Image (tube, rainbow, N blue to C red; front, top):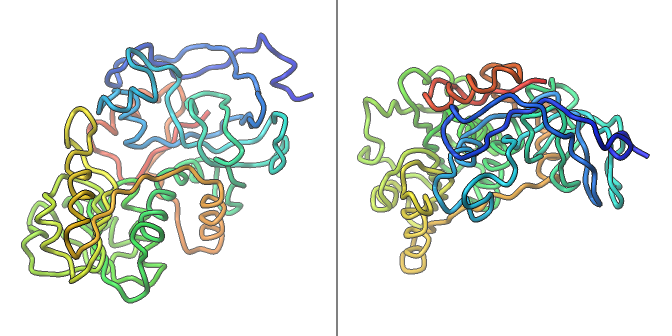
Length: 332
């Protein structure tokens, strides 16, 4: 019988939020350790990644996220999703992992000493990187991988424009697109140009100086990750029958946060361009593939800095202020 099944009264340290809000609602607390159920994997968390998705779940905005997380307050008061750690317990039906395995993937409530994950949301950790480096990979790199290979269907030799190229998803998208043989143009802020060049971008557009929507350049694929360019401006930079993949964007409506993206997806049925709304999913299979790329030296985790669990509030505050390049990890 595993550790989690024999210590029902065990507790752990975790970051908690009793209500939706900014980083000010977060507290370091002591809470019951999760109990393993059928199909569950209990992970002793060594590091947890922090990204914009975690911030949206923390604030409960756009409001549509509350349909899944709780209308008035979070059902799971422990934030965090990206995880890397060691398996300490498994539930009935789990066959891919055993106690002692080093894993990474997605485990809701990962800002804690222990977290539960579904078996199909985990993969074996890349051998060549630390737990902190592995923890900043799954959601962001997985989203970039799916945007490029499934939604965007990118091929070698195609031209790709990536907005928000210095962020969590964008940093991986630049690397993966380059590895796939695409000609990559990246858009970012003035202080992050060198960082994006180091990731493998062939050209970088400083958004504070140049308007990429009016440059006259045309691209086979645009990954729309950051900002809120209009659908018209996105179509203007596409090559004939090119593709836009809507990955993210801030401030696009308080209800769904996807007003512009949904409008583009509807318009796609009536125009020659493809306007695709990406609905990224957690995939242990994709994380295994990403681990192979990391161990082969084709993909590098984009870890800006680490914070101990007790300083997680400061890490979230830095994310809110936009001072982070790539991602940060919370270590336990």
